[in-house]
Image 1 (cartoon, rainbow, N blue to C red):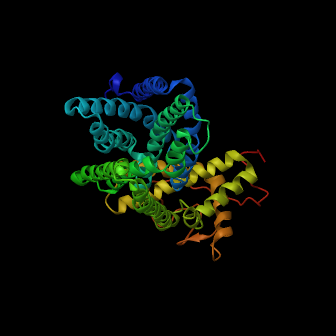
Image 2 (image 1 turned 90 degrees about the horizontal axis):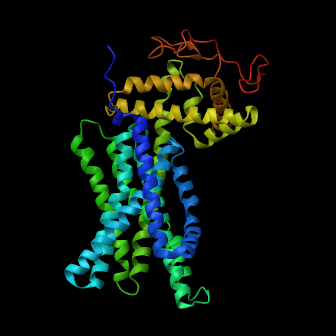
Image 3 (image 1 turned 90 degrees about the vertical axis):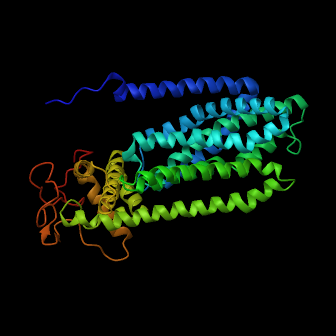
Length: 444
């Protein structure tokens, strides 16, 4: 019996189209608002200067995500949400709240201070955290731990800071134009704004929102039965992000040296601590890969060198370079996908052993094993070469060697967990140096 067809609003294409339309409309509105406040010339100057830190920040978050790279669509959505939807929500909500407070208290100065230290942190961090929440709920397979939360939150905040910097730098340029500044760095408001926002603190917004991302990442590691814990931990991360944001925004009200004090004694150490935590988490992920994948070596799904090679970023890079040099860029992309699928398989097994896997554990494991099997011809020799090049001791050859009493390509006692996707196992795969080997990318 066929399952009932979903309603038209439940279809994936309809939801994706609605999301793209929402972000596009938000982008057009935010573009009009920023241009209205800064003027065309100020907007162009702000756009050019605000773009400078974006590639560096995105590249840093992509580097953190290299162990198990997430889909580029998630990053594109995160950046677009931060730059368009979250920025629009922040501009509208902050302006409305500040005007309401000024009217209610008849004190514009205190309204601006209250808006910057209380209203803005709540509104902006909630708007940015919404992107993390959406991916956590609707792209759950891609959100498996702390690093995923950090990357999604950081890229979202980078997009938000990009739009905010356009506004601040564009207004600063307009101020210089009205005051008739001669362009000297000592008197330029634009130069001072650029130094503070782009040179000194490009990590400010990402640092705040990363706390929300860590909260969602910890929740992703919790078992599904822990409903209260999975709900409260992200809320705690969001509250920490709001508190740090409020401290940063309020530093200007702490006296002549308030900004430098908060920056030097709090922001920089917090940035260093979070950086260490994220890098430590990434190394822990690599250790998980090395610990979990040998189970699939025992059943013939992987070759003996692969767990070691896949647990080393240097070996992974060597494998991709070897495949690219030998067969071309397409082969390198194949190896990269093989590495990503193998990593996902290791994390899935790790969650399963700890009782944290979802109901689709069996289906997901089979999908990943199938994906590895399809790419084995190119990836396995490349990873074997990388393991030989990086191992401190000689690793077992990958082809023709017994694995717990069974030769490579044939199941050990009991066979693979779900059977081979293409019927009977194949014969041992030849090495690249074997003249009988057929290059799948060059036809020879």
